[in-house]
Length: 58
Figure 1: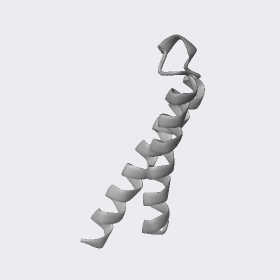
Figure 2 (figure 1 turned 60 degrees about the vertical axis):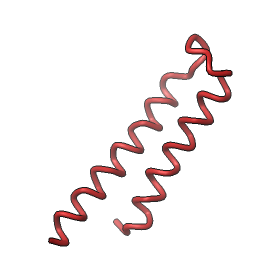
Figure 3 (figure 1 turned 45 degrees about the horizontal axis):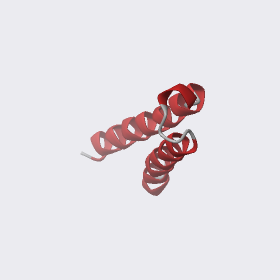
Figure 4 (figure 1 turned 30 degrees about the vertical axis):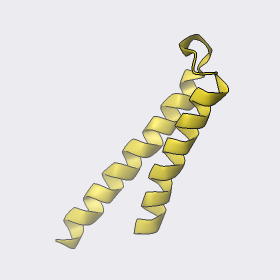
């Protein structure tokens, strides 16, 4: 995976998570947990790909 695409995955996941909280008016009872989980998973996968890419370069 291209390194720019990995950064895009991380940033997009963070933006989607923040927008999900914003759309629920920052109220935990209104949060769509499936969408929040998917956004967090995007960030985690992005960091894992970035970490493996850095290990392969060394």
